[in-house]
Structures are given as structure tokens and as C-alpha cells.
Length: 116
Length: 117
Image (cartoon, rainbow over all chains, first blue to last red; front, side, top):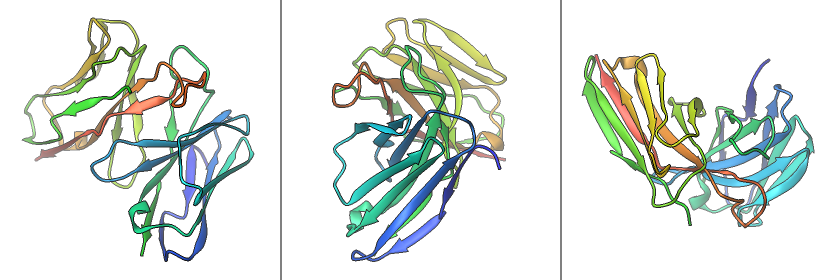
């Protein structure tokens, strides 16, 4: 399999549930990202990992917990979410983060999350 | 705070028409990217522009970076139904969101284009 894959593609969860989103990249990249895409809002960067270390945490509530066990895998653990957290969660990867010109980011297809 | 404003928000046209969408900011960006996102998929990079006044062409798509590097435009000639999608511009932030050394991407809200046969 090539590119960036995300599972599950769709997820419905209650506010008391705990679930995890998974992202895998087969591109040999060093950087991975979590974004949130809501209707009527720009793509919001949530977390950035470079070589498995978190380098950005964009003031995300603690009910979202990222995990990067190696440079190919990225998880987003979810617990006690709110209905306003319903959105498309996109994972992306790039060759690296440090550059005067941004590296191309390769996005996965996203997980459509609905919190009831 | 660096922001990117895209216009129009929605655009519905007939096949064969030309169109231009815009990406504007009051801030200077060192570079700017355009992505296209189709329903059910993640965004896919179309182009990166880095020099003020730069023009890049990709088949029927023409991208321009403003002289002052604060704005960009995307012009599509003879639009086709396959051009339908959400067009996003993204600028490289001067520094990380919280002042870190990484320059992450700031996205506009996008222009949703529908091209009807």
C-alpha cells in the first residue's frame, strides 16, 4: 500500500466513549501531522511530530491525545469528546518540517468523526 | 496573527467557462501553496510559489504570487467537471504557531468549485 492511510474512515461515538484514530504513512517521511477540518473553518493544525517527537501542540484540549510510536505511525486517542468535536480529522506527512520552502504535505483521506 | 482569506467561498459554473479564485492576506508569506480537495479525500498539492510576482502554469491552471507576497490567484481556463473540488491556499507561517522554530502551514477556508457539464 502506498501514500497515507487512515482508519477508520467513519466513526460515531458517544461523549463517554474512548476511541483511537490511526494513521500510517508508507513514504519514508520524517514528519507527521494531525489536522481538524470543520465546516466553515480553515483547516486547523492540531499536532506536529518530527522524528517521533512532538514539536507543535496547537492549544488542543486534553481530550485529544496524540501518540507517535515510530515515524510511520500516528495515533489520535479520543476520550470524553463533545458534539462540537465532530469534524473530519486529517493526517498528513512530509519529508521534514524545517525548510525555508514548505515540503509538500501528503494527506490521508481522513476520518469523519461524529460525536453524539 | 497571520490569516488567509479566500474568495469567492462558492463558485458554480458551466463547463468551458473561465474562472479566477483569490487568496489574500495582510501578512507577508515566504511561500504559498495551492491544494485541491475532492469529496471524501484529503487535499492534494497543486503548486508551490515562492517568489513575488511568480507565475506557474499547470495545464489549464495558472497560479500567480503577488509582488508583495501577500496574495495569490488561481485561474482556470475552460473549466471541466473534473476540476470540481475545494481549492485551498496555504501559506508558510513565519514561525511555529506558538513561536517555535517550525514554520507550519496556515490554510484559508477554501473555495468550493462546482463545474457542471
